[in-house]
Amino acid sequence: MSTTTRILTGTLAGAMLVAGSAQADRSEWPESFTVGTASQGGTYFVYGSGWANMIADELGLSGGGEVTGGPNQNLALVHTGDLALGLTTMGPAAEAKAGQSPLAPGVPMDNVCALFPMYETPFSITTLADSGIESISDIPDGATIGFGPAASTSDTYFPKILVELGVNFEARNGGWNDLGGQLQDGLIDVIAFAAGIPVPAVSQLEVQTDVNIIEFTEEEQQQIVDAFPVSPFQIPASTYQTLEQDARAVSMWNFTIGGCDLPEDFVYEITKLSMENNDRMRDIHRSAQFSVPENIKYNTVLPFHPGAVRWYEENGYEIPEDQKL
Image (cartoon, rainbow, N blue to C red; front, side, top):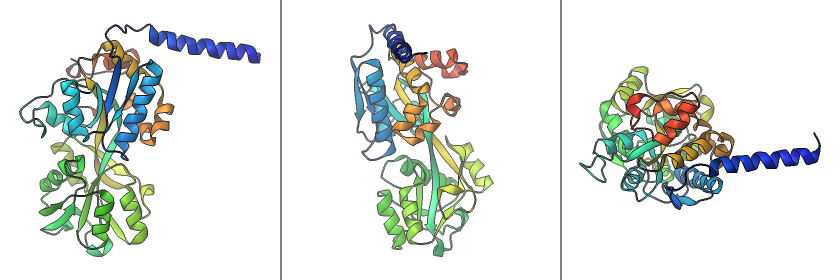
């Protein structure tokens, strides 16, 4: 094939891709859209803003990410239609659907649909090696535990998880780096992280001092999986220099969401672009390696949007009937 032929073929293929998207019924599409993320500097902001830009560019729309208070606020804003799209974790989604959102108690948020899986947020526990704490059961009564920023996924669920496991503690909030400094200075006893791994604060700590990364026992892991919207997880030994083997933990999945009343063709095209271009998604954030259709099974809470369902079923992925509108 000559160079000219290759160029013409590539141009034709690109034109066909654009034409295929243009053939969708856009009569009811929004002229612009916004994706609810979280605070700047976090994974949600990087992932959500990059994803919004990709979708906007490919579909020829105006769109972008917006700084928000994170999963709980994104659910509320998508439910009311103030945002078209957002990012959330399964725990806050379950509470919102049941009318138990801290932002709108008693209001079931039933206009929120899932689009596709993002990645897992592991729950992990770190303390100083000289604390003598080597297991969850070793955490002394009244220990001061840092749970991250107030109202974060970590602050919302990790205290409940430890209460479920019989730990009696005093909670402390703050940024992860600040809490890491407090741990090193002996001002708190434990940090309970719900964050992408490796957690920079842990990586920094283990360079400066000896730490223990506490894993769940098999029984504790199963107890928490049964009680909360989390999944079993293994922190790979390669994550931290402290670990000599994989550490047992739990994780909560993150999903993209959209208003259930968004046009079906609009969401179909968004899902198609997101699920068929994982290389580009990984360029946005490396955690997108898990943003693949095989992981739709980890949404056990929200109905999938009909547009997303259409793409999954066209491509051989089964959506349970009770997760369709």
